Length: 412
Ligand code: ADP
Ligand code: ASP
Ligand code: MG
Image (cartoon, rainbow, N blue to C red; front, side):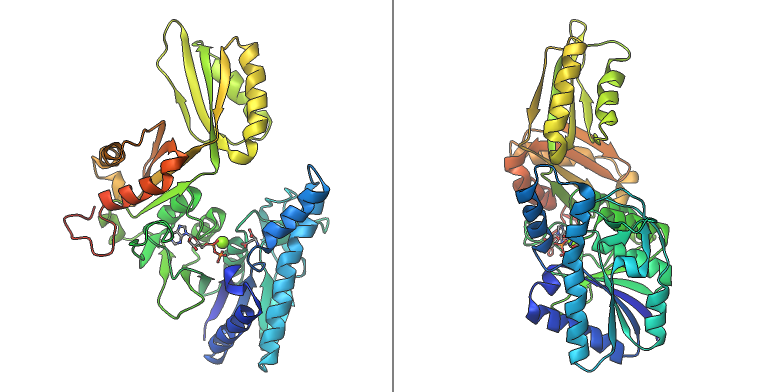
């Protein structure tokens, strides 16, 4: 008998029929003799709907109140799922983040988990009940409701699995595993049987929303094996686990992209020590996270500096940067919101040469201009025009032989 944490995402509990289907699946695992903790998301679209409601009554909603509103989405799901399980004659009990005592810091809308008590969940399991836990939400030491950032139910599931020392954390979603690229964009993408925490973390951070990046990081730190699988069929999904010798043979495991960043360029900045520190210091003071930075070769003692920030911070950053540009005597700051970042990820890159060159060639063949480049040990990212994002993903998927029927020679 195993202790299993299962997590069902928004689409999986998208309507009442689907909630009933999840109930049957949970009961099936219970009848097989397992102890079950089930984490659920809000019904598909519900969190967006709640955010839109808040936006209708406030220009800049107070984050404490926003969390009070957002947490209702998951509270509805746990209650409904419990009822559906009970309707089938099985014992189930629902718990909010506060009842589980998923204690977080006070950073509303993006809180970090500090500790998990879970006494009531353990008690429910001892009594033979299935414990249903609300994803995405926690509580501060002062009993304030918090949420864990978009996609945060994944984190709840992984953190529950770590706290309870569960045998596995099963993440049920609308795809049957982690693919070499988003299957919505690349129909011939291939399902990966296994992927390392590090690669999954890069893919998730670079835009593959199948798992929340913070959840993958947590799973890595606590060595929680994740099994990503479909809630609509029984097929074996993808295991996210520690890297092993087998995995090092693949050079590129997957392609990711995201359109959630904007680019800002400060033109004709004096090329002197301290200028970049002043510019990025001011951006950092506003708690804005800068991703890529590129500085051009200097001409006539001046240079251009470009960098990217999340779309949500674009207006604020432009305002700050325009001010600083004046102070430091730069010509002006210009922005571009129509950009995308495409990335290739794979642990094998550590020991293979020519990977970046192949990426650039593939983009060049399609006449896709590269505006910025950044690399790490296991990834290469390029900023391009947003219009070509999906095309770039398909072209790169092809260039690295990632498709289902690709031959050994085509594969990297
Ligand atoms: P849930 O609501 O279950 O949390 P999400 O919508 O957050 O589900 O994540 C699942 C989606 O992630 C899929 O529908 C798919 O379009 C997308 N996705 C992006 N990249 C990948 C990838 N590499 N492999 C699988 N799915 C991916
Ligand atoms: N409901 C939350 C969201 O939409 C959390 C989640 O689904 O994981 O982001
Ligand atoms: Mg998700």
